Image (cartoon, rainbow, N blue to C red; front, side, top):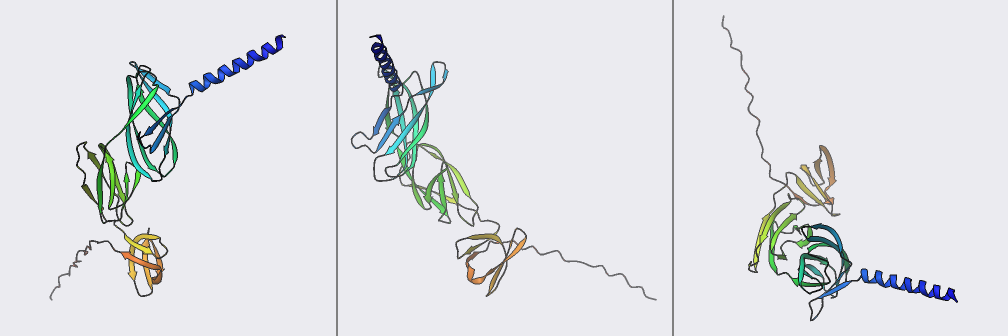
Length: 264
């Protein structure tokens, strides 16, 4: 009769342990906006990384899901964390970018808090539209290291400092830091001028690009010097040639002295 009791006791212990683990690994789910959710954020267990002066640094794996059929190029949220008494004990900034329709991604999120949070609320940060123009147009734009399209392009930026980087084949890359203030008015624009390269650009019909010094162009062929070696292309291979301006320096004249003639 003691054996069944032992088995029941082991089952009870195993069940209690499973429930304890499940409770320890509980997930906090937040949706935004409340009326018609477009994003779903699921926070895994908060793991304490560091404790200093009563304030702790936490990390959590956050699963972010786009619930709509539209892409989400960029969004930023301020997250507020509350304790058991529902008082705010911490906050953090979470940014989302390049989220495809119905796509789900997982990121590591770090924040500071005075205690272990039991609930999370979020507030979408205001974004300001800005038109980015390049001279010449058609440059690839990155905002804070993230692809943002081809100029001229409209981007939405949160208040703060951002880094704009632009690249275009045949031109030197350009970039600039940009400060966006919270009271920035919509409808603004910024123009970035790309510098020319010191080499000629030859665009071939197969889509490839050759950078070098054009030596000669005839009706049948194009000769280009690339890294000190001359390369010859059939004229029908070449789609477009862009020549850079060069400063031609004339060598100084050579003056030869004529020996004085002696007369008898």
